[in-house]
Length: 136
View 1 (cartoon, rainbow, N blue to C red):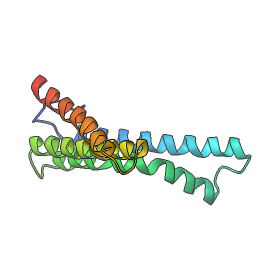
View 2: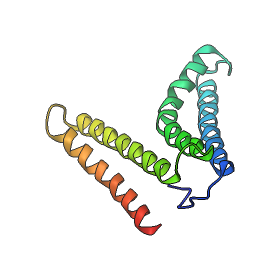
View 3: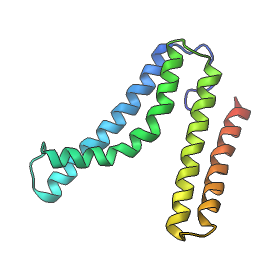
């Protein structure tokens, strides 16, 4: 959604978006490794520290990488910009639905709360996508 509505977008902004996503994820992993070293007094580059940093960064990678790759592949000219944005928005809304369902399950398992959480959070994502479409 951050790129806007520019159908003439080239590979450069797509690479910048991918690099930004990767830099944020690596910065988070580095901060987790340093925090673990300060907390435990261990060395920074140990297998357990890297394993913990990977575990902390994996959710960010799962959520941010597919939409970024869709925009990057668009930048290579393999499909239209509208398809890239639509696919990225559908993916993000699906992630929000999953997060809402998990939050509902954490509140009250085996009841209507997972469905309510998924509906509520998914509808917020859909509303934001619709707002973006309306503005642009």
